[in-house]
Length: 308
Ligand code: NAP
Image (cartoon, rainbow, N blue to C red):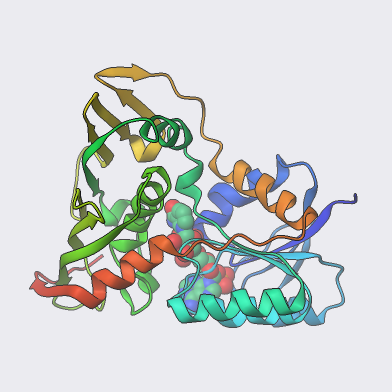
């Protein structure tokens, strides 16, 4: 089969940090075009936006959307209408209903829609999932604390409605927990801390329960300076199973297990190639459902204003 000819939309931080290298390293797919209002790449066709790209006549089979979640619906809809397969950065949209609609459009048009969760590709995730399937779980606690000034400097969209604030990284943790837990869980309470001058939270505290009543808790905070914390701790009858460093390292019953190098985005593109080849889609919205619930059940606290 010939290579999937791909267009990237939104040549920003994640496109440059991860997508370009992963596409280069993945068999069966090649970068053919970029659509970005303020950035260009040498050696591929460049356009101002997706509409120009789709209207150009440049041969494309698929589009990878690396733009902020707000506005991605219109881009994905246009790509699907033009018969292109679509890969979505996380979170897959600014609302649940728009992603449900995209899923339907893609099905009707017979193209692949892939809602990616890059953290699920972190090296410790599948080993933890396999281990936990065999163990009796007592509780889960997530601590996802990072310095927003370091990771998201000047990203105005992230503080706007639909930008998710601290849930932008927090949803990565939820994507891992929803993958490794043998049973589903639901939110029972949350409190969200909004800076006085912002429309999205800077911190969140979440409590969930499984159907059997086991507690799952999550603390997300963007005000952490110094060492950063991306940990998930699962207490089991046999001992603790701990994922650290965003799911790239695993500690089982106090013993560190060596984990391989970061392959998150290469795994995503490999899977996209496989989905297209088998005419399938992959749209799991469970992490976004938990975030939506956190906003629905959330007690709103106002905290100190945040300036970049
Ligand atoms: P970013 O640096 O702001 O880049 C997004 C790009 O999209 C911008 O450079 C911009 O390029 C384009 N864009 C189109 N419409 C825009 C708008 N209304 N506002 C701002 N930019 C717009 O953001 P990012 O960090 O790459 O994040 C993009 C997506 O990837 C988000 O969903 C995020 O959650 C996800 N992600 C980010 C990271 C990370 O470490 N940053 C990691 C994993 C996933 P032009 O101005 O040239 O059009």
